[in-house]
Image (cartoon, rainbow, N blue to C red; front, side, top):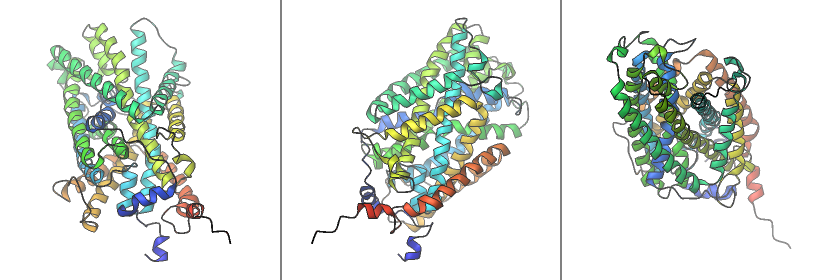
Length: 486
């Protein structure tokens, strides 16, 4: 490799030297403690949650800036799920080939070069933190519904952002800090909690579907497209937030007991399980209650209240809080592992890559948790959801493009899973992700652009020079052995 190429922003992380480079970084090792079903539970935990319990009602009912799509929220989920499936298969191929922490950041770094890896890594730091925040806001809505069932009404000043007529969303802040504490206890404890919580979540959703189907009024499905097809596409861009939890799950590949074998299976299993439940749940929600009357923040609670079952609504609110916690845990895990990987590779200060005795990166865990708490306290749910979507769709575009390029530039690299119909499937993932991004409001683009500008300044002033792929990196000088005494 020429000196110019080694200093280039397009230098690529070599797959065959990743272990060597990781040892050179001096960062601690992540603990390997996750099996297939724990990984699948993390994926399902990340996908199913706020999408069913909050965003489905929000998109169906609409808000001041977006008309309600009514029963067609089902179509919005299917469009988002189809686009997500193409990306999921691309993730599965990479995860089976490179079972490393970092997910899309690592895949982009390996296949497309350092600057693309940085772009996606920096992007995911914001998006995952924002996802934790938006889920916390969703839980806050169900917590209010639960308290209302006992006649307790919290003041708007402490349950809503300034834009929504309040001051700060205190319950959302507390929830973020609670989830941060759970994750800080270590991956093994987190994996056990996630498995139990996801099992409870699936039982709850099956209960909702099984009971709600008896209260469906077919008249609520008419009109099926009350605002036309355009808002459905916008709704698909919003609910896309609800169908990509496997992305964050793939950041835990390095902590899997057998990442190459289990990661592809876990990614596909989690998406199939989630989409099946989403389709059934949206049909029940819009069939039980007219879309115009659905509570955007606690859809199923309002639906069961509308049919004279307030006790069931209260039960749903309680278990919805527990089940949505798994989404926050999955994505908080994701941001800490991406941050850890970028620091281990030298693109961010190595201070962030330090782990405790149990193999948990405590520093980034608490920094990310506090950041999500601040975001949850001051922003409304839709603004944060759109911000997460533009970032994750960008990551999907990079991963789908990278899997095509890597298949042709590195055809002999061992792959435990090969996605079918190459390059049609990943190309569809690129195009559909671009289409969904185009549906997002300009304010989201402006916020995203500002974040990327900050990121590129950090890369060109710190990351490029300190990268472990840079032969002149200060990391190499620190790691070099002292000269022998004469």
